[in-house]
Every structure is written in structure tokens, then in C-alpha cells.
Image (cartoon, rainbow, N blue to C red; front, side):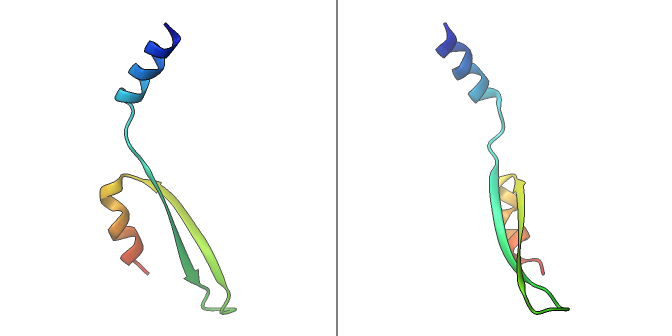
Length: 50
């Protein structure tokens, strides 16, 4: 019965993707990482933005 409840929760949840982008700081020149959790269709736009 527990397996049935878990399976029903997975079908109702939304699929998300974690995107990590490396960004260079204009002040120090060091690289930092920007992380975001989003819908898979928005990943390309996130990575193309500066």
C-alpha cells in the first residue's frame, strides 16, 4: 500500500531540472556558480542569459 501512495505522488508532481551556470565577477575576475531549479523548457534561456 505504501508503494501505491508513492507512485501516485510521483505522477502528480512536476518535473524540474537543476541548472548550474558559471559566471565571472566583473570586480574580482573570479568565477562563481549560480544555481537554479526550473522547468526543463526554461534551461536554454537561463544558460544563454548573462
